[in-house]
Image (cartoon, rainbow, N blue to C red):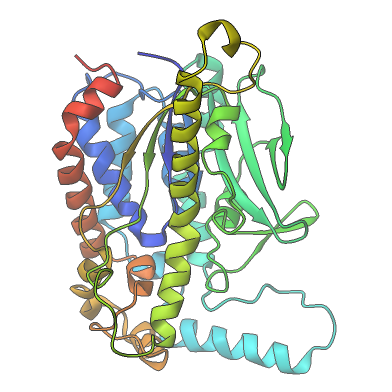
Length: 374
């Protein structure tokens, strides 16, 4: 097994439960005491939380996957953001009141939801010290989290890695060695306007997918030459059918989220394949002078419409959140993917874990070959 294989966790809010199902399918082909088969982990948005949790258990793949499955299978919305009447409408009222009264620079980040419960959950569940120990022991080479810097409009990659890996700087993206904390996770997972931005040092950061121009570059900079990417893009039930009506606000908002979370990784995968084909047509004697390398890639993504699955669990949404969604024009029958990103409910998450497991098993022979599992 190569020590240069990376696992990339794409962003997608509650959809990230799907990634746990993928891991659950893969882990069963490894012995109980086997470390994770991915020496490089890279995550964006909610995917960064899965990547970090797995990094803390890099020495025991089975234990890491079990922990992740337990967390997602017992999740509730009020563990991610305040979902009571006071929590939802009190927070919105406070944001509106401050916006009307204050002409000075805003000292508090504006957002639709208060995600302080998520901060508390991460503080209780993630032992960041374990990441450094796992890197020193050789169980892990590197982990990276992408976040969008609002001050520079750069995609900044925060990473922990073995000493040989250096910082990097490219056009509108950079990599910075740091000791990861809860703030880095919250910054990467701060969906624009929905969750608050996070101040790290002297800059403000939001969801890593927002300015993520090349999502596969981070694991490559960290030494990977083989990548498995779990993309949370899903087929849409109406994507091949022209609509007879103008799209509603909630439909447009859903498309914006789909674009933020999926389009760049799809474009980057196409670019990677073109580079591979180009290199294959260059004689081996001349390849050493070209600053490019062949990268093997394998993509796993949902086979079903996650918005349709989310609609089946719309009734589980807390009443205050449901009222807010209806005020925005979103119901269980709405043609919008927004709910599939925000429904942090254990039953919905379990359904996504099942789908992730089933989809992975459908291509398990290809995955086993890619990972050299015998």
